[in-house]
Length: 477
Image (cartoon, rainbow, N blue to C red):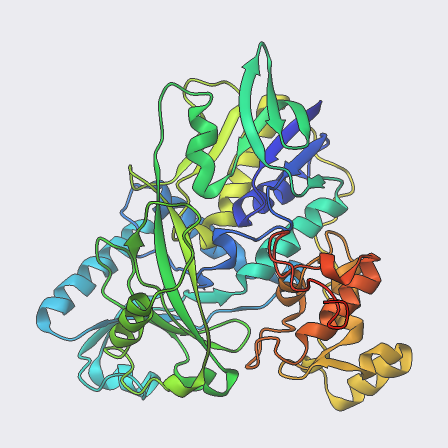
């Protein structure tokens, strides 16, 4: 029995766990994957949206603006990358200007600060690499960029330090309510809880529909992206959007919080909630559409492509709070864009609702931050020498593209909720995230993981137990 069980280890589940960990309660989070941040949270734009796009009066609008205001301080406390670089929504005609003015008015209704319409001269002075045919743009000063991996992982670590229990590789099979508590059956046995928190992302409708007569339907919507080498990260400074459509905010061109250039996403409804394949058509669409904003996109600097799935609920708005007909089932469902931005506010809201229901008291000694992994690449040469003097493993570069050291990789593995896969190391240190995509450092990181975890190298995976890399030694085979 646990007081509170959270289903889902994405940015929403981890935000809820961090906020709940401020209270004295027994809290457990279950995640079906081998690590947190393995589904929607790992494959999105990393944009901190200002809040002009969501329709006034919706939960998307409310939590977008609240989350946007919370992110700068939260990222500072968590010691993770965040940059308020602003965003531009481009218009190429007088009709587009009319639509931009509607977005401006919408943003003002939502409480967004720092919005203005710029003319062609003002736009090109800010962003000279944009399409010279641009005539108008909505400028959102409060738009930003954040590392979605670290936002998820850092919040999980803070929750862990405040005694939240994390159970990975734990897939929920069924949920039922028995009198005044829930029984959650998983592949690792049953868990009973007083309060159940449904933050299962793409699968939140499955959890909800096991308990409620008022059914939800999540439809996965795939978005494909191209990631570019850091050499071209200064192509644009702000996040560049085109006018949004019914399919979403459209294809963007943006620097990332970690210094890359990102283009995408496409928008395509798909049947399967596991369909994360990239396609020739999707990538071509993304690149051709992006050229309307930035004509000279340097395609030769693409280092990888990827796809993610948004959890679109047919009602087109977030679902947040206690289920109408199931007492003590609290939910964050249908969390698509701007879900990453809204996550801190959603976590705070649900934690407060649950604390009130269970009459929880706040802890006298809450740990609000954690010590981040030292970034050798970011240090001056004098600081690097000092690090090496203190720990010689900082003197051994494992990932040359991102200048990640042996000390950083070992820290990623041994810290709270440490990495157990190559992708886990990547999201915590950026090793394998550079232009060679692990071609040089991947085998060495595999060896380090096997040694630190005391596992057979054949057990080490890229991201799941089904993605192991080795089948044996050459001479044996």
